[in-house]
Amino acid sequence: MKPLSMFTLVLTLFCLALASVAPAQSYKAEYKMSLVLGTAFPWGQGGEIWANLVRERTDGRINIKLYPGVSLVQGDQTREMSAIRQGVIDMAIGSTINWSPQVKELNLFSLPFLMPDFAAIDALTQGEVGERLFSILDNAGVVPLAWGENGFRELSNSRQEIRTPENLKGMKIRVVGSPLFLDTFTALGANPTQMSWADAQPALASGAVDGQENPLSIFTAAKLHTVGQKHITMWGYVADPLIFVVNKEVWNSWSEADQAIVRQAAVDAGQQQIGIARKGLVEEGLPLLQQISDLGVTISQLNPEERQAFVTATRPVFDKWKAQIGAELVESAEAAIAARVK
Ligand code: X2X
Image (cartoon, rainbow, N blue to C red; front, side, top):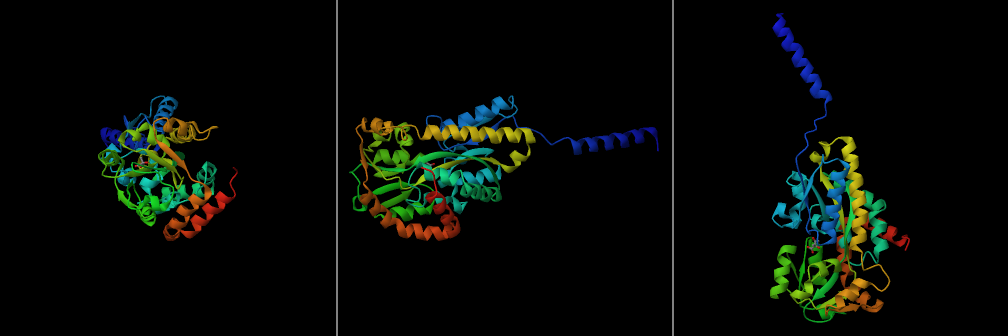
C-alpha cells in the first residue's frame, strides 16, 4: 500500500470511529412550542415558565419559542397531537381534550361528573392513572413529561340562568374536541356545535352560538362578558389537565443531561402553572367569583339536588364512553378518586 492511501485509510477509520462515539447532537437554533392560549392565560404562562427554566438551566443550549393559538396547525387544535408526532411541532403543552381524538384514553377527563373537586384531579394525574396515561402517550409516539391544568369547565351563556337541564333546552353551545362533548350536550337537550377556540369568540360575539364551557380563568382573560356571556353555572362537570410533551426525535437528539433538565423544568413549570390556574378558586371566599360577578355576570351555584339532575341526564353518556375509554381504566380512576386525600 502506498503511504498516501494508507494515510487515507487511517483517516477514514478515525473519522468513522469518531462518528460512532460522538453523540449526534445537532441542536436546533430554536424549538417550537405549541399552545392553544398565550401568556395572558395560565396555560401560556406555564409555557413561558417552562421555556425560561430550560433556557437558563441549559445555558441557552435549548431555546424555545412559544407558538400560541396553535398557529403551527393553523388554529386547528385537534390536529396538534398528530403534528407533534410528525415533528411539525417540537414540543407542546396541550389539553387532554384536544388530544383525545388521537389518544382515546384521554377522554377519561371529559367523562361528565367523574371528578368532584381539585383533589380528584390530583388523585388521577399524580397517581397510577397518570402514569398509565403517560405510558399510553409514550406508545403513541410522544414523550410526556409533566402535568399542568386548564381547569374545571363552567357553563356560560347569553340568554338566561341555567339551573336545570330544561333551562339548557335548544340552546346553541360551542364545544371543542372530542365527540364525547356532542353526546353530553345532546343528552342535556342542548344544541352543541363543535368549533375551535379561534372560531368560538367571533361566534359568541355575533350570537351564532348562545354559550360555551371553559375554565373561569379563560372567561376572565378572554373577557367573555364583553361578548354577551352574562350567566355562569358552576357545575364543574369536567376538568381538563394539560400535558407537557416533546417530540420523540427531538428528545433523542438531546444529551441525557439536557433531557433531565427539560423534564425537571416541565415538572417545576407544571406545578407553578397549576397554582396559577387555580388562583381565585381555592382561597377563602373564592375571589375569582367575586371578580366575575363585579363584571355584571350572574353566577349560579347548584345545590346537590340540582347538580344531581345533570349527573342523571348525562349518565348514559358516561356509560357509553366508559366502554370506549376502557372500563378498567375508568374503574381505576374512580377508585383513585374515592381514596383521595381531600
Ligand atoms: O378550546 C377550548 O375551549 C380550550 C381553549 O379550553 C381548549 O383548548 C380545550
